[in-house]
Image (tube, rainbow, N blue to C red; front, side, top):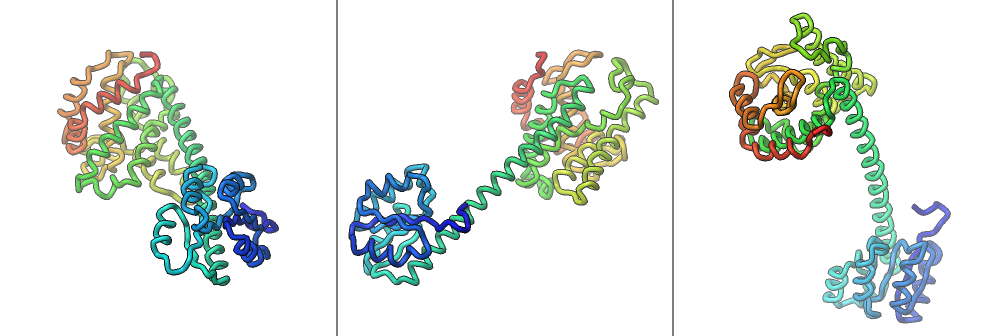
Length: 355
């Protein structure tokens, strides 16, 4: 961005010494001007620092070749180009635009019109630069946020003696299920293009509430007693409360935080209403939680545990199919069956580090 005290730099390419003199006289009060008569010299000057903010080119002086070379060079491709043509030659105007000119001005030049066109192009360029800077900051912030979410989710997995690869598998299975269900009217409101990436990012947080479960229960190798299981079930509320505390601190919520809260709190609900913590049934269970429920159970079945070996992919698929309509949403189970080969590939691609 130019300093307020620095004039925008204009490069003028015109083989006529009279034209160059007239343009310099017209523009030098408002702009820093570099007049150039030769095309090769203009191309070289355009790549020097500081680069021009705008380039005016007379099309008679090999202007079209200049446009092509400037647009093909990454260093100069973004500089606005104003083509100067003789009035009454629409074919030149069309050619100039086709070759990359940002704007066309006709000769004889009208000073007020030329100044207005230059100002407009410079304003557009500054606006584009601002958007790019903001986009870069947003991308960096998104990367930081994604890393923080992953770090929190991974800590919960390590405490539960799970490999973090489990989280990747859950993410991509949820993504596959969501993509397949997009055309289903039951899911139209939730499985939109903006929502699916947020659901993908929120899925790894499903078990963060386990960090508050005592080790004696969380890491117990055998079956839990009824009393211990009641404590274990509290991880859903603990996860929900953690997300809710973030919303309170921020003073607002958003779709990502809503998905995170729904997933942590409701992924243990069952479609027939026999799950926990609320005993929700059917469509009362959030869509995000229904997807994670299927993905989480599939991955648990094909993963080895201290108390049993891993089931085969085929066995896991069959067990989930048998749970359709009872433990799981039938449409989500249908999505799993339809995407079975992709699910198998995801499971193989993101194997545990110990495998």
